[in-house]
Length: 170
Picture 1 (tube, rainbow, N blue to C red):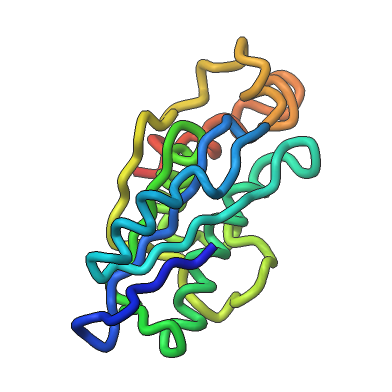
Picture 2: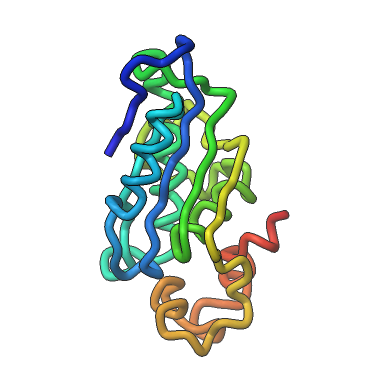
């Protein structure tokens, strides 16, 4: 869901990609609609996104989806009036985790996915994380994390848990 300023004071405004929580098993992109509406009234565009849950695809699918959303804003920046040098990402809980992964990996092509707009960067200039998980390496006892990553460290490898931890990319 895209929220644009109705009468922006400048031709190209900053933008924020909003990523909902729900630890990758539920939640809805409307979770941040109030934030996006409030920011659009202050000349900041907002894009509230959905992403794939583990029931349809495991890590890094959701990270790829978040990266694709940033690339979408860059691809259509001229039409949308978005300043490509001022794109941020924000999320809460699982969404904060995904936002941190996008910010920390700097648009790494291996996490970018094939969701479109591959010629554009998914680098962001700002991150707002509301209670994100930043290190999943010690979370093999949490069923949601195991489901998200596709298995325990023994099953998928400890390197997957390291790769999926934003803290390991800083």
